[in-house]
Length: 299
Length: 299
Image 1 (cartoon, chains in turn green, cyan):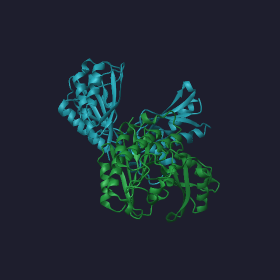
Image 2 (cartoon, helix red, strand yellow):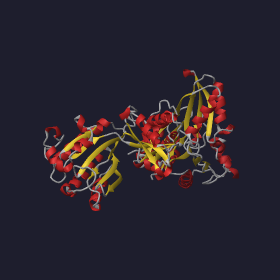
Image 3 (cartoon, one colour):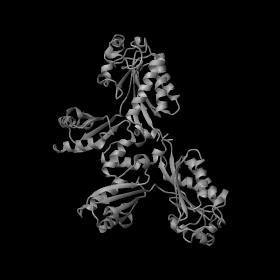
Image 4 (cartoon, chains in turn blue, yellow):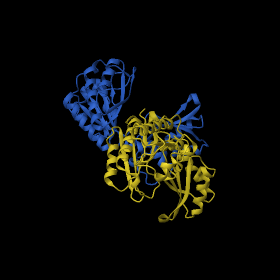
């Protein structure tokens, strides 16, 4: 058993390449961590990093990247379209393999405590790590942004989970938390009628009475002249991909519309697709950890 | 890209535990190799080892285990029920990830040359590595066994691919080759009529006009009072698991029989199941190497 987690921190710098590289270097320097991707948006003036590895190393890389961002980013001078409240804006931990969401929550608490103590940046726990229901949603915490945070943090309702009731003068505050991997999964329909995609999206998503852990909207793919049900699967372990697929198929039937394809955007943990194969092959007693060769080769 | 291959050598010793452990130690000693399993059969007086890793390290482990077997096993004194022709009887290389069967063939040739040169054991290339059609099947090479090999190897038709035309006095000869991973895949039917399983097995297997790379028989599962189509998928890349599954389903239909489950016995490369998920989800443009998180973590 080699636990693996993913970390996807967002930093409030998307323009100065030397700052972005300096942050990347702090992550690359940690043994046991692999930096998979980082990308910046000039308009948002913001960068997203993705790295994976063993929990201890990932926490270390998260800490040092946050430290570097605090040294190099001055929020009093930051401008960008995306809402933000700190030099490091948000640090989510995501369980990938052989680790529970509970262990990721614990790790987020450890990191939060360390950031507050050693960097003097107040920390809010969010998503699965949230200590109050209204803090699960990052948007609630971030409301007022960096400029309003000095005042907001003095309100006892918005006392940080770690650190003092005052923001770091230049680095602001940071949200740290655990969440399940999100799989961006789109299903293409054999029609150009956007109303059908919108109706199906409503029928399958949690918000309107569909499947739990499924968020969905209908979108038009102009270049192909077809519509798509664009889905975020926010907990593939509890709500597997095949269930969304089969439910879209079922609802599309009443319009005489077929699924003509689907796509996964970006990364997925292997298990999300193995679960699909298990379902369709009706596999009995399959042991994910022991029967897949590659699982013996993971660091 | 981190190529991974599997090696499943068979040694002619299944009784003396200290010999089996000494062979295991030579494999464990090689960095970059992971010994997944080894098991011995007392009646066969034979052991099978399974290890995986990068090609260079796997070749090295194969060489040193073969060397150790030649030191500790005297074929002139070996008795066992299973046919055999050498202290190390057979060494297959199996491509697992980011490596082609052609590269495994090349690796088997390198190992064969090394064994002949450094250990003075003649080598026959078999399966995909075979230099003549009649040498693809290991049973043809092994015919006559250790005791008949001294004579057989003098026949120009049975000149070894590497080494002299005389056997190693105590270690005999060895077969080295490359083959695709074999997946043991069984499909259970909702009937106790063995004739139905036998008919379906014949219809789906290569030998009788069915799918290429599929071997199948019908078997009775007494304890569950159902029948099973027991399948060996010998090339899952060319003939994917879902094709066997769907063909069994289709043929079972005419008897009004359903598939009630299926099982994978032992190990499978991840990709064999990812291919299944791709088919059933109708995935478009899925990039196996880039979109599966764990692929970034393989050594």
